Image (cartoon, rainbow, N blue to C red; front, side, top):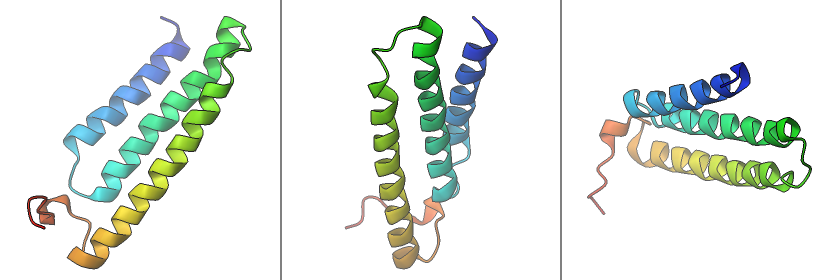
Length: 98
């Protein structure tokens, strides 16, 4: 495993661990998800360069578009939950309540 692969894998793993262990605020969970998407985007962008193929250049653009949609949806949920519950603490949310 090269140093480049190790750095992408460690960035993705650290983001996943941050998502798993630091779930006090909604904004921190969203930032961990965004860093996971960013590490996947950079890895997919570097993959055609390392394999010297030009056929897989559409995949990073699609991932970037889905990442932008995910960020917009996450921020809309953050604003809506802050307005209704008063804060973005995840322990204040009761998912079973209508």
